Structures are given as C-alpha cells and as structure tokens.
Length: 266
Ligand SMILES: [Ca+2]
Ligand SMILES: [Ca+2]
Image 1 (cartoon, rainbow, N blue to C red):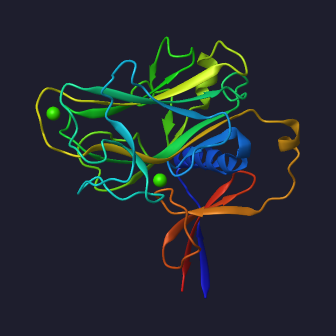
Image 2 (cartoon, rainbow, N blue to C red):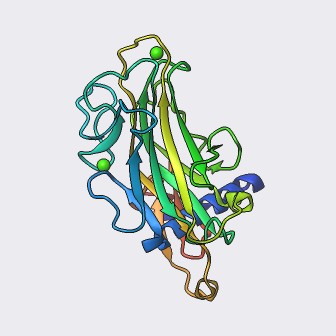
C-alpha cells in the first residue's frame, strides 16, 4: 500500500482551507456554545427557532417530512424545514424563520462565528429565491449574509434559487462580523432565512434546509495551551465527513486547525 501526500500549493487556497477547516474543527469544539438544528430534536441550549407569523400570518415555512417529488428526503431523517411540506410555494409571498441566541463572545470578543448546513431548492430562478440575513441589533437592521461580503463562504455562497439537484452543503466563516458588532456578550443575535416569490405561479417545490449549525464563542486561555495534535476529522472536497477511503482526494483536519490533502492509493 502506498501513501501519497499532496500539499496544497496555491497560497490563497491554503489560507482559505486553513480558515475554513480551522473553523470546522473549532465547530466540533463548540459543544454547548453551538446551536445545532436537525429538526428532529430542538437544541436544549439558548438557541431558538421562530417561524415569523407576525410579519406574515400565512408563513409557508413548516417543519416536517417532505411529501414533495423534487425537494425531498433529508440530511438527518425524516424532518427538514421547508416552504410547505406538501403544497407548491405561494405567490407574492415573503416568509421567514429566525434562529435566535445570545452572543457568547463570538460577536463581541472577536471570537469564532460560523454558520453551516444543507439546502435543497427548486424554484423559478431568479424570480423566486431564498435569502440569509443576520442582525446584531435584535432585528432592527439586517445584513445580507450572501451578498454583503461579511461572510466567507468556503465552498461558495449557497445558491438559493433555481435547481440545487439535491442537498448541498454550505459553510461560512462570519468571524469578521465581530468588528461590526457594537454590543456585548449576552446580546441577542438573529439569523433570518427567507423565501421570496413573485406573482407568477410555478408549482415548484421551493426551498428547504436541514442540519443548520451556529457556532459562537471566544477563545479561552486554555485553548491556547493545547499541546497534542491529533486527527479530528476527515472530509471530502465538498466538506462532507468521510471515512478514510483509498483512491480519492480527502482533507485531513487536525486538532490544531491545520489541514492536509491526502490521496491514498490501494
Ligand atoms: Ca433533519
Ligand atoms: Ca414565481
């Protein structure tokens, strides 16, 4: 059995990988400080989901099992959050759900802010589309997380319109948002997921999310004194967790945040 190691040669790519996978590794370390929404059980920490029926009493976001033909299945089965589990999405509609939690240092102390998850979409592009926004002032102002440039999307921004052809992973490092935040630890942070449609009925499935994770923490002194360096995770090039498989390019992530591209021939 031969082992071949390919180190990433492009400097920019190294920086992106280090930033993004260091984030993923820390995400694992977030523990109590991470909200994980798989829509099977709700997080038992300070993380809440609000389907906003104040701005739209007919809000079309529903949690459940999809009965649809295209946007169906789940990353964690059977439940997802989707623009109606049965009916095509409504026209002239703006529906949102909000994930809300207190800042635990990520936003106020220049710590770690991450967002990751999976989406699945079938819509009329670009007339019917999804948005992800973040508010650092309890919903008074919203920052467009996809268009604004404040979030570094490691695998490109989520494309929340058109056809995703199944479940797609997304991962964003939003740690620079801390410099935008005028608040302090404990203040309410909100992430808003919306779906907006025009006046033409398309009879398409719309947008869904599953396994959304929100990481929010500031580094403690004990984190700086880590000495051991061990393999913590293996992912494929799409960022999906993987076994140590031969004959394909994988990314090994170590506990100190470093990464390595590995291709093992058998
Ligand atoms: Ca699920
Ligand atoms: Ca439409």
